[in-house]
Image 1 (cartoon, rainbow, N blue to C red):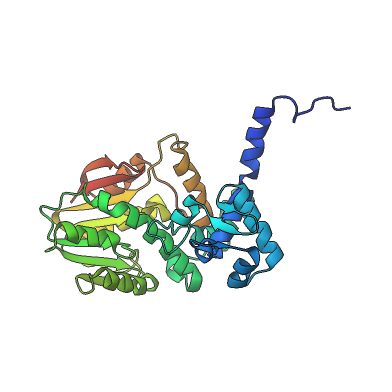
Image 2: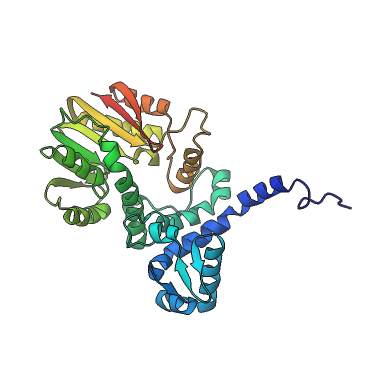
Length: 335
């Protein structure tokens, strides 16, 4: 007969384990609400469950349970019969607000991949992934929203760390919506700026550049930058959060291509998350390495040593590292 009662003895340790194991429940509730745009539907008003369900075209009873769970975890507020956004949810989850976090719809795509983690650990191979260049519909829209949100948060501060004094021709490789390129031009308007990315992304890039008033100021190049020509004669090639999606060996090939695209004395700058040599810190980056295991072929969070190998194999010199204030690093090297 069991006499040990885990919920009565050593309760703090048991709760720690339970919180860790069941954290996905809170995540799933939040991600579903974001996928439905529930917070944007509520907006600055208080609304009943029936009113919210009507606007979302969802089941009333199920919607009310979801709303109550969001109140329980501290995301929404509840009056007598109505629900309203908290200060936090109105600030970060309402897509009409300037601080909207455009990350969570893409996390719903990743959610399904995370569900295959056990099988992926057994085989070492991800399943059911779609390469970024082949994404379409809502999937590419959510991906664009995620990368645009991140770059819009970081670009201004990252570009302040870059010396553009000798840069006349610049390439933003895998440049997304152009947030970094825009910041480069804000610092030095006379730069001859190019942005290269997949065709399914560039149509969103064009819209963003027009909205930001930079249409025609940045030359757009489309294709697969790992296999297609990326141009020549650059003084500076910037690549952000793209090298984590493939292996060291594929990145050596890319670095060789970038080396050939640069003028003598030209520089490459890689912006990405780095993981320590023990590959367990920082925690965020260790978990990101799992995300890349399930969502890419050969991708990983690379170490500083990994980048040194990539760049040295491509004949780059004067490799240096600059740490940012938000957990990323800039790796620079010279041709």
